[in-house]
Image (tube, rainbow, N blue to C red):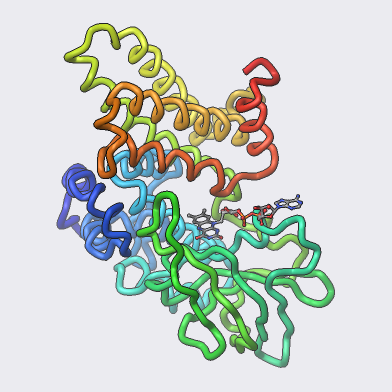
Length: 357
Ligand SMILES: Cc1cc2nc3c(=O)[nH]c(=O)nc-3n(C[C@H](O)[C@H](O)[C@H](O)COP(=O)(O)OP(=O)(O)OC[C@H]3O[C@@H](n4cnc5c(N)ncnc54)[C@H](O)[C@@H]3O)c2cc1C
């Protein structure tokens, strides 16, 4: 099927509304309609279910360009794609046939609430979500701490821990009794992605929605990109590219900026090449190309280049609604989103100027 909106047109539309999305703080419905119209919602769904699949490397390039245009929309898309990828990667054929065609067309929406199994609350020994199997149902109790796009979701891919310590991953329908979505919280940036917590009070879910498990460490099974994956780095790179464009625009009128801007240009190009190599499976044993190192480098660049754009745009850039202040706030997100411990350590080393930073 021919897209109604080309990818380049989509990027233009997203870039034109990026400041409005941030200011409105409401879910980007219109932007998701554009994603549907451009075929982007089919990227991670096989053709047999109505998708328009792209390779991992194409997906990474696409995410970078989408994040440059509008991080909020792109980030919400990655959470939705994470859910789709977990469904696609499951061996539950019934649920794939039931959910994937409507996800591919954009008629339904899914998201993930899995951080309590990877990067959130890992210092707490009691499971955040407890699961008990009763016949052909799972009973879920507890709280899912982070779910982006919860208000728009028909299904949330989430999981919990059984009494014996094994974990399950489930495509939880959102209309079940006992699910209560908390009001969204105002965040430093990305508030429009409607991230919130969900309380689960004796939620009864048919076992037909099981995607994986019961097994130890269910999030290390199957596909979908783990915490600190290349996708997360690509989004940070996208924000950096947007700030680079701001710097380049300023440097056209201000020759004294050219040398610093060209240093950032080289860093962006090098990182982009390395992300591309890693996405093509060409990382080999090069430590600079490990997922952790690429994420650390992406975080570092996003923090520095967004602040450089602020320094250069001066007081004007400090005003609410200026692209420079938006980018600075957005860069902070990468300090907390999907950051495994080695990435946090890398950030702290840089901030304390340790280990050669
Ligand atoms: C905007 C946004 C959107 C997100 N969207 C999603 C989503 O859609 N789906 C999803 O699954 N996840 C999502 N996440 C979650 C994200 O990937 C991380 O898991 C999350 O940011 C980790 O933060 P936390 O506060 O839960 O971490 P925690 O590790 O739980 O830290 C919470 C607090 O505990 C304390 N603490 C931390 N570590 C220790 C320790 N070792 N010992 C003692 N105390 C400690 C600290 O005081 C800290 O403030 C989102 C996060 C953000 C910010």
